[in-house]
Structures are given as structure tokens and as C-alpha cells.
Length: 135
Image (cartoon, rainbow, N blue to C red; front, side, top):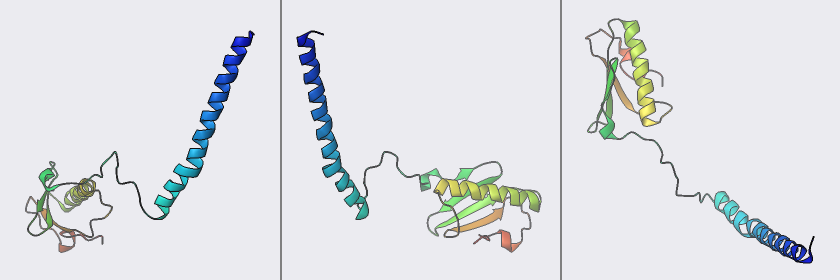
């Protein structure tokens, strides 16, 4: 190798080592302690790229052929009209409506909500199936 090539190679290698050392020191003694301090004090980053999923009243009613979910703002109640010619079909469709409502509101349980289930086909449904019975 020529002396010029060795000199250029040595200077590039020295500069790279210096830049990487400065970057390492900055992350180790400035950036990392600041991030750890923010998380331990509960100061989490406020900017997120993805907003949390939530259902707004403009997305209601949620309709399918098995059920229709309507939100009443005045009473803060969700009314679910469930189709089904017999009790088994009604319960299957009611469970589907529950799952759809949980998905729309991003909830694990509907216990904190006022939900009223009603048969859309005038089926005589026992009282235990007309409200949230799994709470």
C-alpha cells in the first residue's frame, strides 16, 4: 500500500472511532439517564404515532343482520336489538352483539356500561338475558 492510502485509511479510522466514542458517551451519560428518569417519575411520552381506538357516537348504530346496537346519549345506555326465532338463536346473536360492542368500545368487559338487550322478533326472553348478566 502506498503511504498516502495508509494515511487516508488511518485518518478515516481515527475519525470513525472518535465519532462512535462521542455517540456512545452521549447515549450513556445524557440520553439514557434522562429517559430512565422520565419513566421512573411517570413522565411518559405524550406523542404517539397510533391513537387509541375508541368508538364515537357517530359510529352508531352498529348494524348486522343478527343485531342492531344503538347508543342513547341522554340515558347513557346502549340498546341492542337481537334477532332470533328461538332462545338458542337469540343467545348466539346476543353473544355476537356483545363481542361487537366490546370491539367497538375497546373494552374487555361491559359491566361498567348500561346495556339493554331486546328481541327484535317479539320473542319472550327471560329477564336474565335482557341485561348484563356476566358481571
